[in-house]
Image 1 (cartoon, helix red, strand yellow):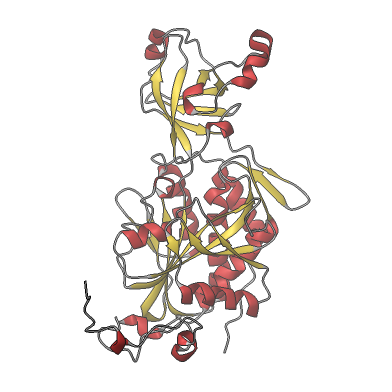
Image 2: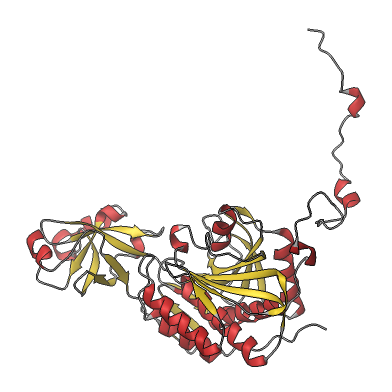
Length: 396
């Protein structure tokens, strides 16, 4: 019997998203948002453990504990750090995560020093139209050409020193969230707080429905995805399937939509698992969910970090459609709802291969196949008989 997908509470999804957006969490500064998500799991009665640095590893028990699966969303966001204090009291910045300074210009930010919080603005080096006129338009776009102006008396480096400002201090960019009646959600840091909200809403729907899972599922909330290590040390169990949850760029040349959930077939790390990706596509079709296939050319995910850490797992990626990724991002409640529903369908579904509970070893009986062997070997490309090549010697 096919499990009934529980309907996610979209009001809950938007509430936790808005609350998470209010918590600054650039990579390396995630303790507060880890505490927030841990409290939400406690409310749902979902047991979890935490790594030393704060990755959350939760468990939903199923009828069988092997092969089990994991789903992962990340709590950390892009941001910046103080690179140097200038003689004029302005601060130079280094990005945290991979993003363009173009999207930082004009932003309001919070600087977190060891003594407290100071507000400020990120500005281009030529920030006055009345002083520089059209020269402003000729400035290069790079982190070397922006600076942080603090809302404090700091006209010299000594002033900054007196305020306790140091190299390496964290700079968090204001999210500026707006939820419109049209269903659009605009904010910085939807990557990946919107994905986290969709996962929490899916978990709440499953718990509220009382349905039993077929196999154990481990929801993960990682804290270093933006800098590449993400889920590398987050899998202590016998996980055979790993589904990352992240952002899908809506842009020319892409196929994602703000009104659908995307199944990524490939990213910068290469193709995702053939079988697991198609399992997700089938679940979307069976449940009439709006879904897109896409490839992400400049993109890594938690799934990639888990594989490169040496885990022998099948990986796939689900993503909500979002315009202007790593800028002032915008998605739609349609995409988050579709993502949450598809996560519910996946978590309640049987394993892609029950035989993944143990490696195939030397036996081919339990090993998968993508299409029938005879069909795959039918090809217009012809090769010469082996006997005509083996043993030939050159006359030269």
